[in-house]
Image (cartoon, rainbow, N blue to C red):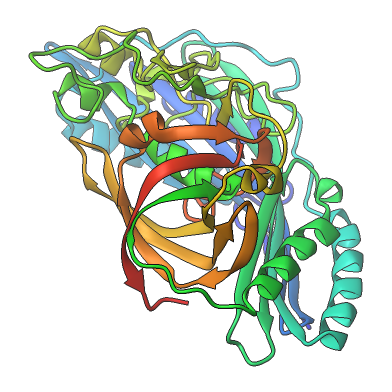
Length: 474
């Protein structure tokens, strides 16, 4: 096993974050406004292959983002840059470069006065550093799993990581906010020794000790055992149970298409024909809810905007703005669209900055994925999705692949595995074909996990899920 040792990337050990923030605000004092966002990621990880730990390590990365705003006769322009710096002198150069970019910039479409955001009592506190001890329990569980897997003819591959992200946000409007966001993920991939079978399970947690590695392993072992029998299934529209991971990938795609700018521009399924949005409209009789919540006890995130660039989801001018949490789909009704102040005004909807997590539930949903499968009759159990991409923004049609386990269900029992498929379906249209759900659980979207690791979703029973063709991927 090899070990990667901490390679601090960012300021010197004797430089405090508060000094960097103060230096940036002081250096930008000649500008009309300044935004500073310092982000520190402390991570520890384990990687394993063929029943052996291969790598363990810790990393620490600090980046400083600066936005310099200048007022013009016709609006406000800004220049924003983010980079790693070593000291106060580096911050001053960063501010000077951002100011030069602002001097070249034209008036920003989303220009607005900065928000006088909150002032945190602990703003000057430094972050917790990464420690391999946080994954010690995971490592012990893996050791036992490797011994058992070797004896029983399986190989385990995977990756576990725990990261604590600390964000310091300050603006010339008075914001001084510090947010700490710990979170980790575990992914376990099991294969038969002849590599003809492959199964996957993954989840997330606020602390690694909360991950039940034996339970994840049991899911993987069950999948490999089901793959001992093969059942051919033709492509087409099928009744399926999507695991919480697959549900999160599908409804995460739905959320990423639910922004106010797209609707205001007349694009996407949430634009009303002739202009306006469909906010307040019942999209489905299925009482499904999609929301976010920065105060979630496991999936919690920062409760203020900390943007150093503008996109469809956020605006640099909103930095410091409170993130209250929004019910985007509220029991089947379109209850909100992700928006900055600017895009909210364009679309004529309430401001709703995204909190960075995804919470899905169906009214009355209860039980496990296995319970849902037992009650589905005939159909398919889809473990996880991969390479999900949008094909048509207007209908929210997405395409992608199933991966590491599609199982055939007859009379509520799994009778074997079938091939992987390419799927083509619209999360928006699919909402009306949901026929049941389990209880929501913290999970890991396998495709969107890099952008959306914090997710809680139930297994969903869906009619008519379109598996368009057989895939040779395995």
